[in-house]
Length: 283
Ligand SMILES: Cc1cc2nc3c(=O)[nH]c(=O)nc-3n(C[C@H](O)[C@H](O)[C@H](O)COP(=O)(O)OP(=O)(O)OC[C@H]3O[C@@H](n4cnc5c(N)ncnc54)[C@H](O)[C@@H]3O)c2cc1C
Ligand code: FES
Image (cartoon, rainbow, N blue to C red; front, top):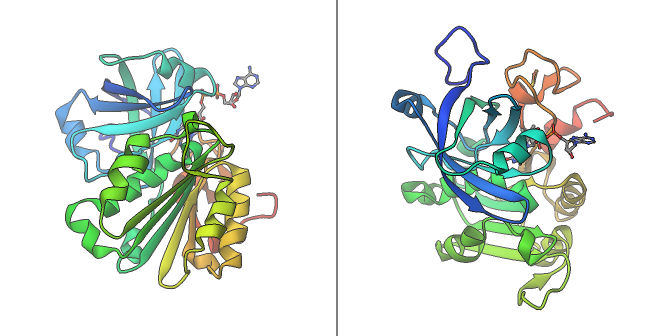
């Protein structure tokens, strides 16, 4: 469980921030490297897994690893400033040191997605976990193992679009890959589509045949995206999402993340819609 080879599973490994990318006014991406090259080498994440990032004297937060495992020697996290830890992280720059432990949780089941088309539907910073799988699928020889890739992504405004270099420049260049970007409200600086992600999804109307849909975003977006997918004929087992429930220990000990008998940190954060529907009604 995680990369820790010591007796204390809560012990973070020191890492240094190498680069910080300003994605939006409240989201930054942090590229980090473990100080110990052996830890860097042994940290083997899968797309969709998370890590606990800590700052000494401040605390810890669960953050998805947004970089694909095909990108060696560096880990990337995209973080929205919402509270104590994330604000403190936003104040750090290249050369600053943090703690990282993980990787935790299950991963996107790319093994069963091979040979299928993939539809990604993301909103705001919800693209961060999806990006680890998108880059994994598009990387080198992996690309041949998957069919058509469609990415539908939206944010409130142009300024709120994360990973502009990927959605507008990098990803559309790949073969058999279509990227659809939308913003909620019209903007003089935006020539593209305007409207909410679920309505754009219905306009694009991707076929459910031989396809998995993978979605992540704000709860209200997910609710309407799931309805739209069902309406278009996607079955619950074809729909995969990743939950952002409050997590603390990341290793099944604290009980902070449980839904009925399931622990998001162990059984998730990735679930099919069929699995989610088996969870207790309060969820
Ligand atoms: C599986 C998973 C994956 C995740 N992936 C990502 C990711 O990739 N990127 C990302 O940015 N986040 C991600 N999150 C969410 C992230 O873990 C939380 O946003 C983070 O823990 C917040 O930590 P914090 O210390 O900054 O916020 P906290 O200080 O714990 O605050 C959390 C919330 O409480 C509110 N709050 C804080 N202080 C007060 C106060 N005094 N009064 C009232 N309200 C207050 C904040 O506004 C915020 O909404 C993920 C979570 C999970 C479980
Ligand atoms: S986060 Fe502690 S049990 Fe899941």
